[in-house]
Image (cartoon, rainbow, N blue to C red):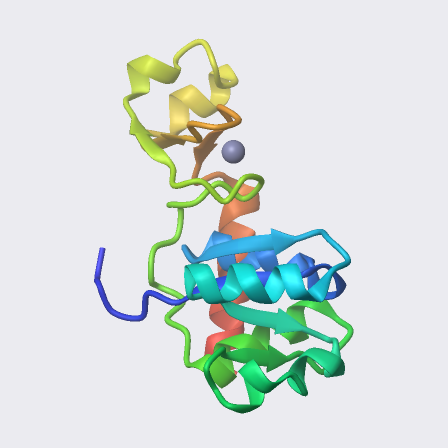
Length: 161
Ligand SMILES: [Zn+2]
């Protein structure tokens, strides 16, 4: 994996779908489910995360206006357009590290051999896929199946348009 562009995010619950999209391309994206903006800002500062939000009040905070903390105000309501905006505004690399972060837990995935997942994946998957990853937190097994491929295809469309 390349070491450039190691941005980390904290995703406000008003744009929550962005968290999965970002994880899909390999970005560490924490989902903020609280209601206290100050907690989100404190976490963002402590962990050097970029805030993604629709909340204009956050953009007016001094930590943000002084650029001590980076925040991006998301304008669109539609998740795919939101992702497009994030990619464009922050110049994200969508080839950064797909297939490296759990879409549910935001944990780095661990590589697993075919034998290790033999009893954990459907037989047709086992027959056709050779690369597997496991989440150490929820133990989901990931492979580059059709759903994953469809999402990646969509992302490629964003970056070309
Ligand atoms: Zn997980």
